[in-house]
Image (cartoon, rainbow, N blue to C red; front, top):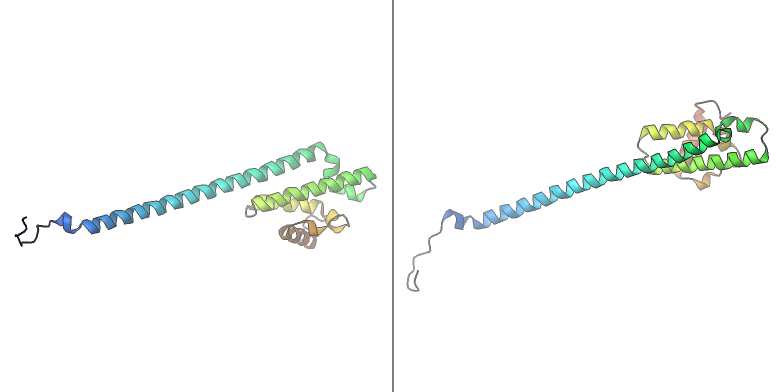
Amino acid sequence: MTDTDTTPPRTGWLTRERNGIASFADLTRILLAVIAGLVAFWQFNQQWQIENERGARAAYREFLVISMNNPEVSRPDLLERDATPIENERYFWYVNLMNQTFEEIFAHVPEIDAWVNIAEIQIAFHCGFYLGDDFDPALYSQRFRETVQRIIEDDPLGYCY
């Protein structure tokens, strides 16, 4: 084309659709980025759940070791007999450790029924402790207090009254 030539330049399909193709490529990149973000979020969420389950297992495993090493305080009938002051003190700290363990479980895996059921059974076994003066509900989460209150009202194992 010269300066004096007034004919329009030849434009082919690719030249005319250049903006459309660029827009499509941009849209594709955005879509891929969104998909990658969703996959990354899903992986992060899955890993978070695995770590929460691992934390609950570790806390409960530690509690089980203490229970097996101290069977005399892990039994709920300790409150029904004349225990020595040392036995009462050991039982007090045992139940408080148990409470903290289940607080961790409620924090880590509150939606997994199997873990919640384990906590509820143990709380029901030691229901007498929660009726006594040694239990201070203010030290625990709302979820834990509500669970204890519900178990006391329902008395599923017959240890509360």
